[in-house]
Length: 318
Image (cartoon, rainbow, N blue to C red; front, side, top):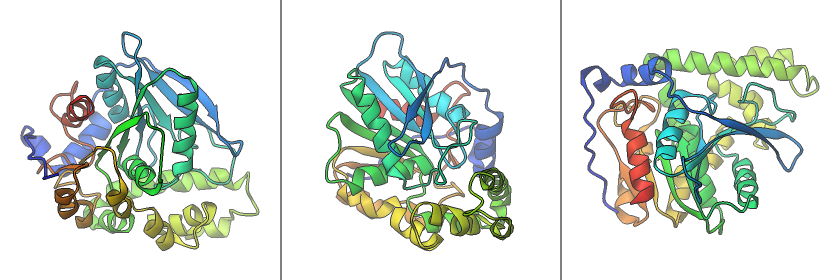
């Protein structure tokens, strides 16, 4: 499928990648959305929370929405996407990954960019409701990588999953970490690190034999957090193996349903290999759009409707 020619042309301030990223994350008014929380038990005895919102009329279609690193289902970009989907006849199941819904999870492990077993559990729980004939997967940033890996690593998955959308997605985890380490990204990098260190310190109380003050002091970068916690907690020998085995770029050629990837050219979070132009030109199922502007999850049109939200609905319904 050839590259999709982008028509996204924001107003002047939103042509700056950092402005669009920060405005959309911190300054955009939160869309009014009524959400109902459902706590679900995972196969290993842990839990996660799903925040549901519904179309005005009973629907047989549901979109499972996945947030980014240290996000949650109350983030403005999640609520904005869910609201537009609801307005267009879709129910929305916005997933809070383990430990992201305001309450620490039970187990030593939490979530990561490739932990697809939790996504699989959520899909199975929703299918058991026997309510939906069509499922779409919509992921932002880390959540986009997660859903693409899910679709590409399995020989089969439920037939109800028809399409998927990945927005501002780090298809190469190592490359994207290197991009975040650029000096101009220090605000984002430090924000992530502060939150992750805080979670590690809280978790230390429950797992003193695995998480120590000595290791806590080592966490001075995102790479070291993945080395000290993410990798060992999820069965990888180190951060580099975690990045290598979980980057979704390698799984894209195996995906057989239509997927739409929207990555802005001026997204400072992602690396050059997160724009698989050559691959998209050869694959009939891979729809790739690379607007010049948009930053990281910052595709502003108006506060009520973002370009990414509009394009997601268009792709799922066309």
